[in-house]
Amino acid sequence: MELPDNAGGRAIGIRLADHDETALEDAYAAYAPAVLAYVSKYVGRDEAEDVLQRTFLDAWRHAGRYDPRQRFTGWLFTIAHRRAVDTLRNRRTQVVDVETIRDLTGEDGRETVERFADAADVRAAVGKLPDHERVVIEMAYFEDLTQQEIATRLELPLGTVKARASRGTRRLATLMRAEEGGAR
Amino acid sequence: MSDLTQDPTGGADSTHPDLVALLRGELSNAETLRVAEHLDECEACRADLADTAVGHSLLSGAGRTLQPPASAVEASAEPAPLPPAPTPPGLLARWSRPLALVAAATALVVGSAAVTGVVLRGGDEDVPVATPQQADFEPVEGSGSGRVQMVDDDGAVSMTIETRDLPKAGKGEFYQVWLFNPETGKMLSLGILGPEGKGGFEFPDTLLGGYQVVDVSLEKDDGDPAHSVTSVLRATYAGSDGESGTAAG
Ligand SMILES: [Zn+2]
Image 1 (cartoon, rainbow over the protein chains, first blue to last red):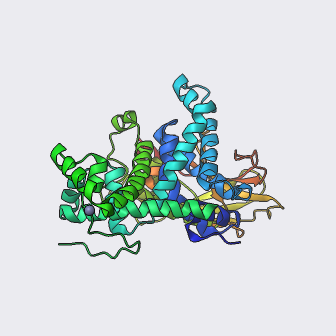
Image 2: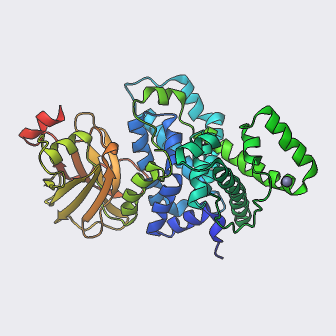
């Protein structure tokens, strides 16, 4: 049975497992910023970019192990988690602070993976909004600007920004609910 | 100017315009209380508010999670990775292309900032950046050979790899391309060489850092992402000629 388009990440995972070459590009476009944000919590910026690359290469190489009953972002961030752990372990000569280790491993680590997977799902859904709405939503929620500030930056009337933010916010809710529904 | 973008969800724009601002705490106390009064009497806006609250909750949670840590913001002298709208986030635009090429199972290759500076500009500001630069692969094991070529085009580096006389990879084996820093032993896993032993890759030069050598290794699909012991080819860029020392410094 084919999953509906709105199954989002799962559909990407299934395409990856099927060696669909465009799936990796789609996965990267949808999830790379969230994966980068996640690994940047633990490793330095240069290393984070390496870990990011490794994570997606692993996802491509081992996509056959992706179980579509699992949400794709959960699987992807589990890989990112492993690669981040590897990177810290390989730092034989450098001290890694206790807080970082505690946050990365054990209960906290699992919780963080789930939280970033959640955020990545939302971030990917934002990417599906019509451009006008997406831009306003990104500025409001990922750059932390007020609607007034957005109106100034975009040189748009405040009413237009409010209308786009309102439609985008509700559409985002609809997309996420559809995705959840399609997954069942 | 009003925004007449059609709304396929059928959302009514006639409802109160400040529901998002209400949830985000962008209203004055007086405005907030006026919206509250309106909600008391307006069924349509209450329904709207419920949908808006669900979207707002998802978004604010994601925004909080994905926010770069304050320490990173302070430590970084660079501007925020995502430039202001209306252009799409730079991160996506810059990063999505290289992986398209990985996905195409072509080889992908990365150089270092120093390498780019050296190889592409040769320390001479007047050299056109589009001039391709190249280095030859030397066999580490076996008798393969080949060539790596790089072109810098406005911050995006294109690399192409052509190899010759590599033994055909066995079942479950493949040739993988890496970046390698011989001094530190640091390796960056890059991608898989195509069946013809060729590949190409584009990447932003911000990705570059600390590598001097392109390495091709024979790998097994055994789930171990680490570099195998079997390097077959290497090409050295940085430090390979007289220009390197000056430009790398
Ligand atoms: Zn109303």
